[in-house]
Length: 297
Image (cartoon, rainbow, N blue to C red; front, side, top):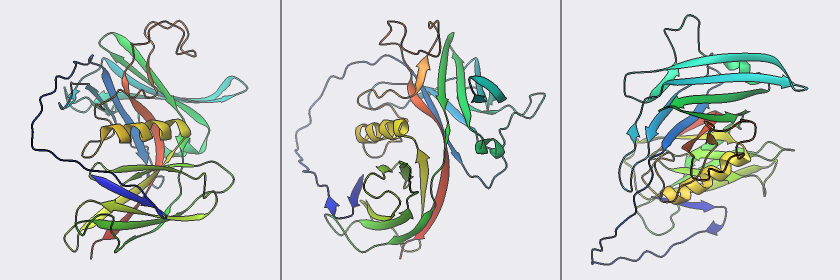
């Protein structure tokens, strides 16, 4: 479980325990396709590390089950005055049968990897998934982030001694609205926007609700985000709780940017049919990631 302190604002919660065990009948959920399409990019590498994971949603407290698709494809297009001026395609293949993990097909007749040089252009990236006879689509653009200036261990605490404070410092890019997704490891994520510190150096504390052995190295990263992905992760982090990744089945369904377009007559209008209950879960995002480490004293 994480606890977060931003500047001088402390958020607390009341924890109530009881000894009685209560059995709760939870309703069955419809099985849905779950798409883990968060692609983290290191711009110093020659290729984008494309990896799309597919699974089927489960009931409460159960793990999602990997699932195979008939086909998975990423296209990228640069459009100017409604005309495609540059384009490319990446055909994906499953790493092993039944894994549900898809990467650029190494056995294709041409190199299916996406060079990081494409990220310098204003491409729209579209993910197509054909699964169990249905067609799914998601679109995104590449979002950059800023480097982390420093990460250091603090000595503060919120509720007790069995905590570890990490202080993160970075400088926001001026003259543009920025959104950030921080990954603190152990399934711990944090989103923040620059509404109150645009263009400024900013520092905040993150509290792990545990202590670490001296010498433990913690990996921390920040990823770029647009407002839509920010809102999605904000809801999903809140609902998934501690010890779950952001692409597990949440308590309440959170819709991402992946759509079932099987029965649509115009994929540019994703709500033109009366099918409010036909949708997958998950998200497709292509973001820059900057990393830092801190060694626990």
